[in-house]
Image (cartoon, rainbow, N blue to C red; front, side):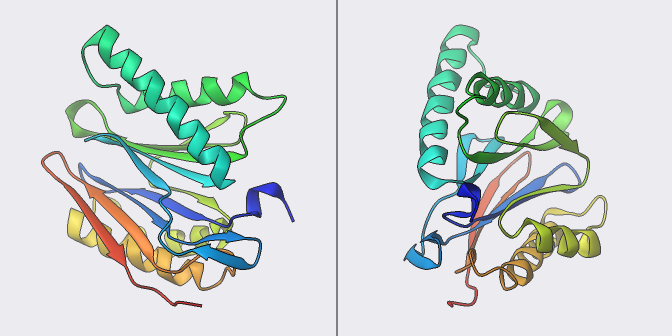
Amino acid sequence: MSIFEYNGSALIAMVGKNCFAIASDRRLGVQLQTIATDFQRIYKVHDRLFLGLSGLATDAQTLYQRLVFRHKLYQLREERDMKPETFASLVSAILYEKRFGPYFCQPVIAGLGDEDKPFICTMDSIGAKELAKDFVVAGTASESLYGACEAMFKPDMEAEELFETVSQALLSSVDRDCLSGWGGHVYVVTPTEVREMILKGRMD
């Protein structure tokens, strides 16, 4: 078993019309043994920028703490929040810095940039960015997430439809992966509000 699969995870970010959604499963396991069913994988950087970390849970928490530290320094120096593109470059640089002994994480970054344009991106454990205009996925359930998202995605969805699409894609995909699941955690972010929803899924 790969070290990336040790705790299990499923992450997805999808863009809509001037909005985006980011969702994750809630299971924390040690291989096939479930340890917790309320694990947080999505972190808020600021009101318009969210970060999802799949992979090894301990590394994800360490990396998040480093990123919070760097973002707070940026806020103090620049007196503004980081743009999503800038934050993606920061995450990439921090990961590449540790390329010979990497953080075993695959980040998903989602945010609203200038003129409320949604930005999503993912990268591997050494910071190679993959930008997308529709959706990005990560984690042990990524293969089935790709299939579900390809089938369900439509351009320019409004926030409500985007929530439904992301939720259905996540719940149907984690049922096909025994290392992730146990419900879902969804954020839908528009220029005016952030909505957070907890999904109930199969509890096995």
